[in-house]
Image 1 (spheres, rainbow, N blue to C red):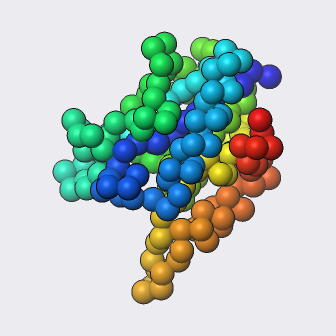
Image 2 (spheres, rainbow, N blue to C red):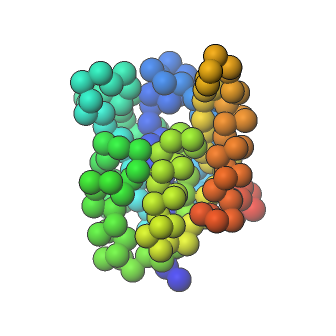
Length: 179
């Protein structure tokens, strides 16, 4: 088993004052920071995923803005891999799969934002590609959604997606239990 930490889209636009503020973004980023510190202290591979919008009608993660930058709580160090993506699935049209194969990674520990979008898409793809996935639920964040005029609270969105991923696609746990 060779493990790597995958930190997905913990970027400024998701925090207070950003253009797509998530519920509990700060706490999730603090938990991701604990994971990051643990991986760094053990000299285990860390891969940062940064989403940069390319669609003309995009409203967040716009190129060359403060919002697109990786948040200070999980800033990459020199030598840590940063992979740019343009779709929710971190594997789609990126070098992620090649990097993982080259490093002999078999197990991924996943944290980041948004639980219902990029975390879900990447975790499912990783499992389908043969990776063992551990998803750190309290190092992820989501937002309120709406369907058929009915508001779904962020905590319910978050928990529903974690529950759907648990067992079949990942082992869902907390940063406290993982560390």
